[in-house]
Image 1: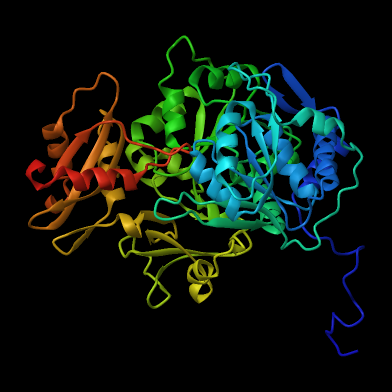
Image 2 (image 1 turned 180 degrees about the vertical axis):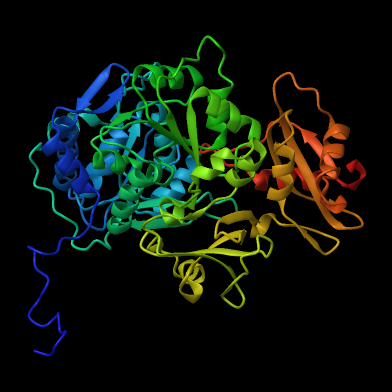
Length: 548
């Protein structure tokens, strides 16, 4: 044997190699902490032993139906215990979990059912009619399994589907579920927003879900037995992998059917919540709750937010209320968060304005992400770390998707040059921290000059009267395009277009100042993302005569 030859005679075997899968986290939590509360939902409490047994029952019934490796099980569920069980029981059968956005219409759901080749659809009682309409429009025609959640206070449809609890009762709580054959096996498929054309099916694997689930616990400083409040939809990027994360620390999932201020504050006070996630709109909801709904917090609560950075004034109020806010960034294609704004202790000594500037940055790579770069997509070379030169944000590592299901052309384009191309534009600051400037499709080109819509939004968000804003391009007869700002004011605020225009002129180059301010509700997705494609269409229809 040659010196340094550490492979000859040393082979992989079951004793020294097992595929990574987040499903083992639940098994361990049930073995070590069987009586610990795993799930809280209204009056319901389920232990880890019960959680694991019910997930195994689900897996066994799927296998009994002939569902296994290579098959897809779709779910149309809010943040209820059944959704957590599906995140474990479906992949325990070998099948792939397909979580559907509950805000979609029947036609969009039917497209996903067909594209994912769905074999079964598990649906909450609230969405039974929607599911039946979608199945009727689809070619896949998956059978329905109806989940009747006791916390739903609406009307029940006539029974015309398999009952979820009856299906689990027929399952085996000791089911010896198989490990994935390979950690590269698909664990889930999630569909992108599909704002232009049909959405793409993002395929994730067991290895990536395992790594991100562990990284979530480390990044968010989750201690043993953390308590997590489900304000982030689990259908969105599999809840950023947090359905699997809580088992890492034997924590408690606190489920919420709806994101409303009173139930959130009640859970924060009565359930001992330590962590929650959501878009800035969720933060605004918590902050704007009336005095009758608010509760005093006896501990610091970690709030992880993504999308646009929260306004400086909102961050200050959240800190005063007892929240510690962490800014994350990622995409469906990166399992959720893959970048974190790691906070330095000395930053806390800075002024609130300086802290807000630092908080606006997306940050540095997550622990399981091997590479993060901002590059010129033409040359594939990194841009200078000067905080000014824009390039495309690119990712490389084990928490990047397998690819787009049944879409080889889109997959090849996304991975061109050995990197995942996000489509987001950003800069790198001298300290290595990434900051987004725009989506490539959202850049406004006025008289040949590129205007970052995010830059204009950041200036507007500093105005104390603005609650929500979004900036898009609108046609201009002389410059081609000019910014158009859609604004929601803080309740009771009186700012008008002239005041906001003056505010922007003091802080932006003249050509970057919005040519029009529209005071109206800003349309958002169910996950809190602003629907800029809707706003672009509205701005395009305003016409040049309406320019201020």
